[in-house]
Amino acid sequence: QVQLQESGPGLVKPSQTLSLTCTVSGGSITTNYYYWSWIRQPPGKGLEWIGYISYSGNTYSSPSLKSRTSMSRDTSKNQFTLQLRSVTPEDTAVYYCARFGLVGSVSNYWGQGTQVTVSS
Picture 1 (cartoon, rainbow, N blue to C red):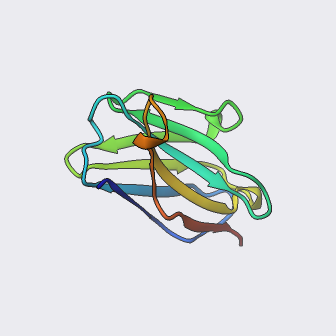
Picture 2: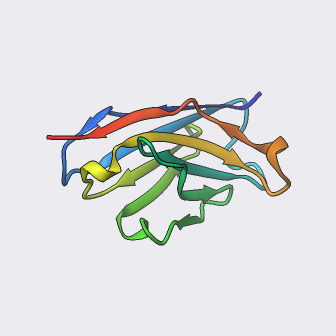
């Protein structure tokens, strides 16, 4: 089965860059036609989609976060990465990586999530 694991610092200072890596096992991040995605959930709020990097390397970000978001991948390591710049305490959340397909939940896998706190 496909497994995803988030990793990165749990504490980031305001104005700095939040960097997370998702390591994928059991499947290739280049496999057609999957979208390797980042989602977050602030405390007391719902899930918020951040963006994805596709099987072909194309990226698309939520309009509300696009100006601060960069995503990339390393196919040799089967990893994809999120960078969120100029963070504030409002960016504190549990961050998830996930695989989404085009045909429904049968194709979807989620990591367990990782807590990131923005604080000085």
